[in-house]
Length: 175
Ligand SMILES: NC(=O)c1ccc[n+]([C@@H]2O[C@H](COP(=O)([O-])OP(=O)(O)OC[C@H]3O[C@@H](n4cnc5c(N)ncnc54)[C@H](OP(=O)(O)O)[C@@H]3O)[C@@H](O)[C@H]2O)c1
Image (cartoon, rainbow, N blue to C red; front, top):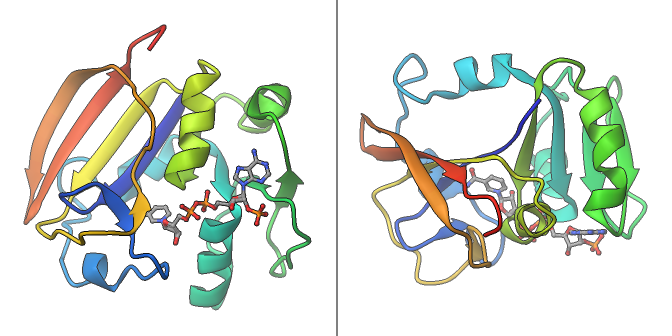
């Protein structure tokens, strides 16, 4: 089991605008059968982890819950759950919940969907193995950060997918 951050980003390191819009991202096509595409990535995922804003975005933008995997939402709030969704709420230290998250993933991997600060909490605790990012050909100037921490990474793969530059990194132990 390993833990991955897989996300799209603006070229200047933001994953959403300050008001949580992703319109800048959906304005660009991604080849779903091309390199580092989502369908093949999600096949290997047994559990999802996200922060409250990302979960809130999904609630506002999905008619139906699309994930079959257990989904862990870090929040201090009481948030609704869509019918049929296996959503489990957590708060505080990611280290304390990680064993439960890993167990819920079975023999597959964990996807920390975002945001960047929550991913940083996993990285700081030594619990992040890989970082996959697809850079869209756009700068935002401001927004929700990709990963607001110092992390040392080893580049293990690169690809072009239409207008996106895709990179896959291994997180260096001790970074
Ligand atoms: N570009 C992409 O591919 C992509 C991917 C993923 C997400 N996104 C977007 O990026 C944005 C990310 O938003 P964000 O930066 O605000 O990050 P976020 O992680 O989605 O939400 C942050 C919130 O999560 C809660 N939280 C985080 N760590 C916690 C902890 N240890 N314990 C308890 N609660 C914790 C806190 O909320 P409370 O204290 O209020 O509960 C915190 O304010 C969203 O708009 C999302 O839709 C984009």
